[in-house]
Image (cartoon, rainbow, N blue to C red; front, side, top):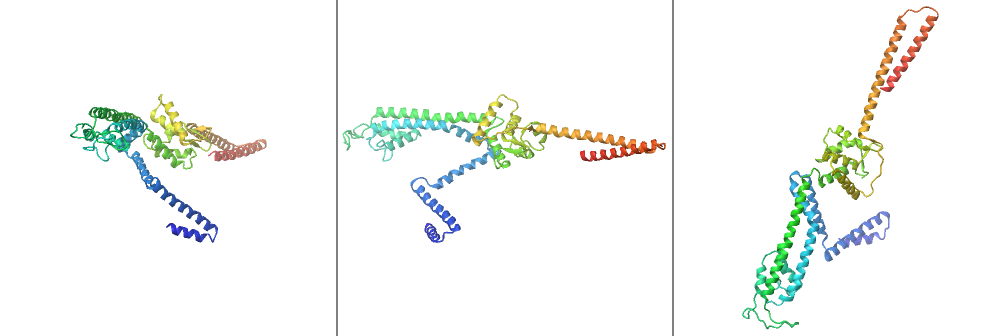
Length: 395
């Protein structure tokens, strides 16, 4: 594969067109990627491992399953415990480091028998750490202690020399060995390991209490996931016309099922020019609807704003010009005014028609009365036409 790519690159060197330059760049990047992948796999970690780690994202599916609430609580408790567990792990490593040095100084030349062999011994630091890890699991520690308790000439040789050192003999030291094992088991297994359990149980109780609250962290994350569908360009605003569909697309308890226009209007959401509403204003209103007027609302509001700023460092400043409730009031007021004005025009039209009918049916004298009647009829006819035009424009 690499040879074919190199041959194609050599062939394109003779014909330097724009298409060949782009293809040459593409092949160069592919060749570099293959070389880097081989180097990383040979000297570092296989890139396939990172692809396997991405499978952990499957855990996000648990948020969509209603029956997996207990599993989500356990995972959340584990995530909360990670910092404390890391510190306890460092403490356990420090204890193992000290005891490994002490074991090398006292049990390095103990005769290999029972549980002490080529791998499990105190001759090197690495092997000492392996022995201590086995003791921490409380499995097989008696087989490691048994050779250390042997100090009789029948079981060991107290005068056997060791090259490179002045220490003689391969016998153990029972008093030191018992003290070593007893203290290490108490510190590592009965204290440190139980600290792991205590931390996890404490965080699990906290996670359980949070899961019983009306709103959780998953609810806010789900809100932002739905928001991305209605605001793909990340403008931080959506149109007022889409608010009803957005509220119906959310998951419980933030969801407001259709028909929901009256509920959304009563929330009195601030609107900017273009009939758009900001993301935080909607989130605050929906959260207030779930929690109600509580003392924790202000603190929760600040936390939501801080989290929003972390996800969107550049918050867009805006100046509301109206609200959803005020907009509805304006629409209702305009409708009432139009209805009243139409009624007024109809009354005027009826009065004008009645007056015109009386003028036509009432007999007039000749001369001035005839001229005045003609002018009145012409004036009423003009007024009638203007009233009909006004009524048509209003409707």
